[in-house]
Length: 478
Image (cartoon, rainbow, N blue to C red):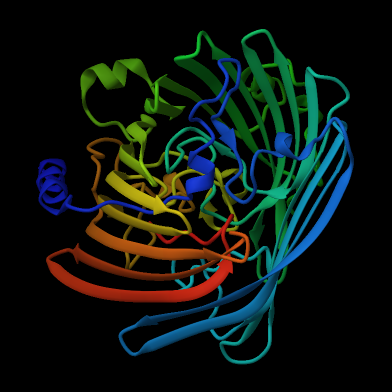
């Protein structure tokens, strides 16, 4: 019943669309048939574009990072700068680094801050005043045309959607090392990441290892298989460090998890896309745990933990105008990505590393954008239903991936939206103009959110404006 009510709510409210970075979404259009586009960085262009077989280059640029946001009687602002370093040693070595720093008068809490700050680290001054340091960077080495090695501090995104159920870019960047190998129509990624979770006075590290193998059958269709394991690197009794069993790029994680007798968290997924001309259908499936007999019984067993995504996007050029549009549907069952221990949760610094809503939700998301010369207008709508965990106790209904699934009230009857039922509709517009060789953008962004929680309706209006670097700009479309 809750799901049917949400679908009606989404259809009635689904009258506008959403924000996207034009430059990143151009990448899949008109690429050669052997190029795989689902692994990308939203802070930088593809790192391959840095290399130049004829020359070595180095450049350093600066941009202001100034923004203010208003909601009701609250006003938040930040003022700082953004430094970007790019360098390459012909085709062998490429480097990108992005350092954004400055002063803000609001606690930098992602998804709760008016400016949605996601800095890797901050320095507290007094009251609600902070220095923020948002550092991201990648270095790539190409020993030959088949292999590339990367390392850095950044997000890793897999998929063709605005959101990803595998690895997304809405959280806080993290250190990583990556091996990419290309052969024939195959492209393989082996990724090692270091995530962390806050303790009373320090951070506790945890590791994540992922495999992603993608096959591009022809210029239209591609399919990829994803596997990932999250493990605690240190606790009060044991300093585990990197798990050597997961450092082998040619193994499956589930048998290795059993062999070491661990309680690590293994997930598997599928990513696929079909492209024709300037249109693309795409889909993802993520599986945490499931038991086929319980699915057939249709008793909504708590441990059937999975999610899926279906979407369509397109690109159109009409004279001087360029248009981008997308429709996307996401659904994730309760308790997906969660574990007993926070050091095994599929998350980083108390945030999901996949979809920003975590689990126990269903979402419809749409966007349309138009660009003409240096101007762009992006309009979006997000409508979703989510089941929140108990607000007065520790009971888990599968909405908070960081709350232990051992705190569930029963074994069965877990539907999407169970718990404190929350419905929301967000409408937003971003109007921007690029200046100074298109490297900097001036923007204004009004957003309106109407939500309903257990019979009570709330209305919130936000207005954000500022000037910042165009690529890697903040996203507030969730």
